[in-house]
Image: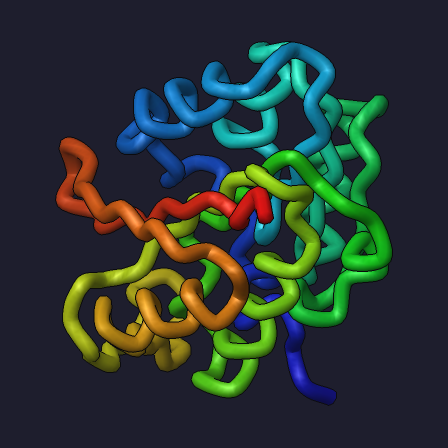
Amino acid sequence: MHDLSNGYDAISKLYLQARGSIGTAVVRAWAESFPREATVMDMGCGTGIPVTKILLEAGLKVYAVDASPNMVAMVRTHFPDVHVAVEAAEQSVFFNRSFDGIIAIGLIFLLAEESQQVLISKMGKALLPGGKLLFTAPLEKVEWTDVMTGNLSRSLGAEAYRKLMLDAGLPDVEEFEDEGGNHYFSGARSTI
Protein backbone atom coordinates (compact mmCIF):
# COMPACT_ATOMS: atom_id res chain seq x y z
CA MET A 1 0.00 0.00 0.00
CA HIS A 2 1.30 3.45 -0.97
CA ASP A 3 1.93 5.80 1.98
CA LEU A 4 0.04 8.98 1.08
CA SER A 5 1.78 10.82 3.93
CA ASN A 6 5.15 10.47 2.16
CA GLY A 7 6.64 8.78 5.21
CA TYR A 8 5.51 11.38 7.73
CA ASP A 9 2.94 9.18 9.48
CA ALA A 10 5.72 6.87 10.68
CA ILE A 11 7.78 9.77 12.06
CA SER A 12 4.97 12.00 13.39
CA LYS A 13 6.35 12.18 16.94
CA LEU A 14 9.86 12.98 15.69
CA TYR A 15 8.39 15.65 13.41
CA LEU A 16 6.57 17.29 16.34
CA GLN A 17 9.82 17.42 18.32
CA ALA A 18 11.90 18.70 15.39
CA ARG A 19 9.55 21.36 13.95
CA GLY A 20 10.95 24.71 14.97
CA SER A 21 9.78 28.28 14.71
CA ILE A 22 11.57 29.22 11.48
CA GLY A 23 9.10 30.88 9.14
CA THR A 24 6.49 31.63 11.77
CA ALA A 25 6.86 35.40 11.26
CA VAL A 26 6.03 34.94 7.56
CA VAL A 27 2.98 32.80 8.38
CA ARG A 28 1.83 35.27 11.04
CA ALA A 29 2.12 38.26 8.67
CA TRP A 30 0.21 36.33 5.97
CA ALA A 31 -2.52 35.32 8.46
CA GLU A 32 -2.87 38.86 9.77
CA SER A 33 -3.40 40.16 6.21
CA PHE A 34 -6.91 38.63 6.28
CA PRO A 35 -9.96 40.01 8.07
CA ARG A 36 -11.01 38.04 11.14
CA GLU A 37 -13.30 35.10 10.30
CA ALA A 38 -11.80 34.72 6.81
CA THR A 39 -11.77 31.06 5.73
CA VAL A 40 -8.39 29.49 5.02
CA MET A 41 -7.08 26.01 4.29
CA ASP A 42 -3.84 24.63 5.72
CA MET A 43 -2.62 22.00 3.23
CA GLY A 44 -0.21 19.47 4.72
CA CYS A 45 -1.00 20.77 8.21
CA GLY A 46 1.12 18.18 10.02
CA THR A 47 0.45 18.41 13.74
CA GLY A 48 -1.07 21.88 13.43
CA ILE A 49 1.89 23.44 15.21
CA PRO A 50 2.88 26.09 14.36
CA VAL A 51 0.89 26.98 11.19
CA THR A 52 -2.69 26.02 12.13
CA LYS A 53 -2.15 27.54 15.58
CA ILE A 54 -1.02 30.85 14.06
CA LEU A 55 -4.01 30.91 11.71
CA LEU A 56 -6.39 30.37 14.62
CA GLU A 57 -4.65 33.04 16.72
CA ALA A 58 -5.33 35.48 13.85
CA GLY A 59 -9.06 34.77 14.20
CA LEU A 60 -9.37 32.79 10.97
CA LYS A 61 -11.73 29.91 10.27
CA VAL A 62 -9.42 27.00 9.45
CA TYR A 63 -9.79 23.86 7.37
CA ALA A 64 -6.80 21.53 7.46
CA VAL A 65 -5.61 18.52 5.47
CA ASP A 66 -2.85 16.00 6.07
CA ALA A 67 -2.35 12.46 4.79
CA SER A 68 -0.90 11.27 8.12
CA PRO A 69 -3.54 9.82 10.48
CA ASN A 70 -1.15 10.29 13.42
CA MET A 71 -0.61 13.97 12.65
CA VAL A 72 -4.32 14.63 12.10
CA ALA A 73 -5.02 12.99 15.47
CA MET A 74 -2.67 15.57 17.04
CA VAL A 75 -4.51 18.39 15.25
CA ARG A 76 -7.82 17.10 16.58
CA THR A 77 -6.39 16.94 20.10
CA HIS A 78 -4.88 20.44 20.07
CA PHE A 79 -7.51 22.19 17.94
CA PRO A 80 -10.88 20.39 18.22
CA ASP A 81 -12.77 23.14 16.36
CA VAL A 82 -10.68 22.86 13.18
CA HIS A 83 -12.27 21.05 10.24
CA VAL A 84 -9.56 18.50 9.45
CA ALA A 85 -9.38 15.62 6.98
CA VAL A 86 -6.98 12.70 6.61
CA GLU A 87 -6.31 12.58 2.89
CA ALA A 88 -3.78 13.34 0.19
CA ALA A 89 -3.73 17.09 -0.36
CA GLU A 90 -4.37 16.90 -4.09
CA GLN A 91 -7.46 14.73 -3.46
CA SER A 92 -8.97 16.83 -0.66
CA VAL A 93 -12.75 16.91 -0.25
CA PHE A 94 -12.31 20.53 0.82
CA PHE A 95 -11.70 21.52 -2.81
CA ASN A 96 -15.49 21.55 -3.16
CA ARG A 97 -15.38 24.77 -1.08
CA SER A 98 -13.94 28.23 -1.74
CA PHE A 99 -11.36 29.92 0.46
CA ASP A 100 -10.01 33.37 1.20
CA GLY A 101 -6.56 31.83 1.52
CA ILE A 102 -4.66 28.58 1.17
CA ILE A 103 -1.29 27.88 2.76
CA ALA A 104 1.01 24.93 2.12
CA ILE A 105 4.22 25.08 4.13
CA GLY A 106 6.68 22.23 3.58
CA LEU A 107 4.31 20.19 1.41
CA ILE A 108 4.57 20.87 -2.32
CA PHE A 109 8.07 19.47 -2.82
CA LEU A 110 7.16 16.18 -1.10
CA LEU A 111 4.82 15.35 -3.99
CA ALA A 112 5.54 13.88 -7.41
CA GLU A 113 5.72 16.43 -10.24
CA GLU A 114 2.26 15.60 -11.60
CA SER A 115 0.74 15.81 -8.10
CA GLN A 116 2.36 19.22 -7.57
CA GLN A 117 0.84 20.45 -10.83
CA VAL A 118 -2.61 19.13 -9.90
CA LEU A 119 -2.44 20.59 -6.39
CA ILE A 120 -1.38 24.08 -7.46
CA SER A 121 -4.16 24.14 -10.06
CA LYS A 122 -6.76 23.00 -7.51
CA MET A 123 -5.55 25.50 -4.90
CA GLY A 124 -5.81 28.37 -7.39
CA LYS A 125 -9.30 27.34 -8.46
CA ALA A 126 -10.46 27.00 -4.83
CA LEU A 127 -9.57 30.59 -4.01
CA LEU A 128 -12.24 33.27 -4.00
CA PRO A 129 -11.53 36.34 -6.18
CA GLY A 130 -8.68 38.15 -4.43
CA GLY A 131 -7.93 35.02 -2.38
CA LYS A 132 -4.29 34.41 -1.50
CA LEU A 133 -1.98 31.41 -1.83
CA LEU A 134 1.29 30.93 0.06
CA PHE A 135 3.56 27.90 -0.29
CA THR A 136 7.18 26.92 0.12
CA ALA A 137 9.48 25.20 -2.36
CA PRO A 138 13.14 25.62 -3.22
CA LEU A 139 13.98 28.23 -5.85
CA GLU A 140 16.07 25.81 -7.88
CA LYS A 141 14.88 22.77 -9.84
CA VAL A 142 16.37 20.01 -7.70
CA GLU A 143 15.77 16.57 -6.19
CA TRP A 144 17.03 15.41 -2.79
CA THR A 145 16.43 12.82 -0.10
CA ASP A 146 14.26 14.04 2.78
CA VAL A 147 16.39 13.75 5.94
CA MET A 148 13.50 12.72 8.17
CA THR A 149 11.77 10.13 5.95
CA GLY A 150 14.45 9.09 3.48
CA ASN A 151 11.95 9.70 0.65
CA LEU A 152 12.66 11.62 -2.55
CA SER A 153 11.67 15.30 -2.57
CA ARG A 154 11.66 17.51 -5.63
CA SER A 155 11.38 21.19 -6.49
CA LEU A 156 10.14 22.02 -9.97
CA GLY A 157 12.02 25.34 -9.79
CA ALA A 158 10.82 28.93 -9.66
CA GLU A 159 10.07 29.23 -13.37
CA ALA A 160 7.76 26.19 -13.32
CA TYR A 161 6.02 27.32 -10.11
CA ARG A 162 5.43 30.81 -11.53
CA LYS A 163 3.88 29.31 -14.69
CA LEU A 164 1.70 26.91 -12.67
CA MET A 165 0.47 29.80 -10.53
CA LEU A 166 -0.28 31.93 -13.59
CA ASP A 167 -2.18 29.03 -15.16
CA ALA A 168 -4.13 28.66 -11.89
CA GLY A 169 -5.35 32.27 -12.03
CA LEU A 170 -2.65 33.80 -9.81
CA PRO A 171 -0.99 36.37 -12.10
CA ASP A 172 1.09 38.41 -9.67
CA VAL A 173 3.57 36.05 -8.04
CA GLU A 174 5.84 37.32 -5.29
CA GLU A 175 8.83 35.41 -3.93
CA PHE A 176 10.83 35.84 -0.76
CA GLU A 177 12.81 33.91 1.84
CA ASP A 178 12.55 33.55 5.61
CA GLU A 179 15.36 33.61 8.17
CA GLY A 180 16.06 29.92 7.54
CA GLY A 181 16.46 30.33 3.78
CA ASN A 182 13.09 28.73 2.95
CA HIS A 183 11.74 30.06 -0.35
CA TYR A 184 8.11 31.23 -0.52
CA PHE A 185 5.78 31.71 -3.46
CA SER A 186 2.83 34.03 -2.87
CA GLY A 187 0.03 35.08 -5.16
CA ALA A 188 -3.54 36.30 -5.26
CA ARG A 189 -6.40 35.12 -7.46
CA SER A 190 -7.52 37.63 -10.07
CA THR A 191 -10.54 39.66 -9.00
CA ILE A 192 -11.92 39.77 -12.55
